Image 1: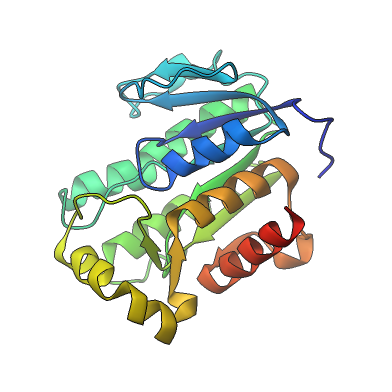
Image 2 (image 1 turned 135 degrees about the horizontal axis):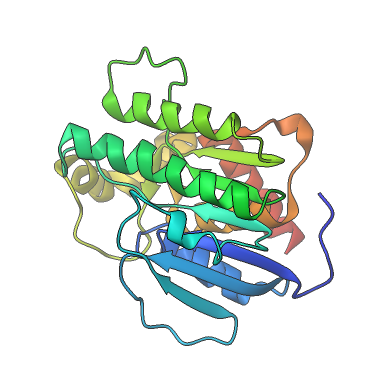
Length: 234
């Protein structure tokens, strides 16, 4: 992917109030490659920055009203999602699949050359055979994105995402993992990724592309390697 001169890239971010999206926004605003960031969300975040344009959009079930806003974008980072156990199965699918696909279709129509970075998850199953709803729905969303004709789609499948910023954990599993994180990270380094590191790679890849030999699907081990490369380059 050819990257224009410094400050000439336009990026749209969805899900900037989440633990990954928040850092994606920070990274984008600090990047000299980015000239403008369009933030689309269901509530305002209240940040003032010369690069930032906030767009309030309450209903991701219908993104047609965003067609004009999404025109002329170079890349998108999509981090909107829901945690298993915090919503019903029907809502989990709606947020994971319908919101992602609906937004992506409008982006594809308005900015056909845009790249798309999608926050998926470990175990995402594009065959639809998994017994785990989260895996099926993430896989369904991945499959739909790949079929849309974007020139570049990047699917990130992190395992446990360590929330760098202290927060109220959404479920028991996250509370336990945060508690044992120091040991878990040492024993299973390829099963964890920091939220800020993941965000930085998602933005960087959306803007700059990556070695095509890596493919389009990045498992946790791949993401860690990309983080190391990003730090080495920076």
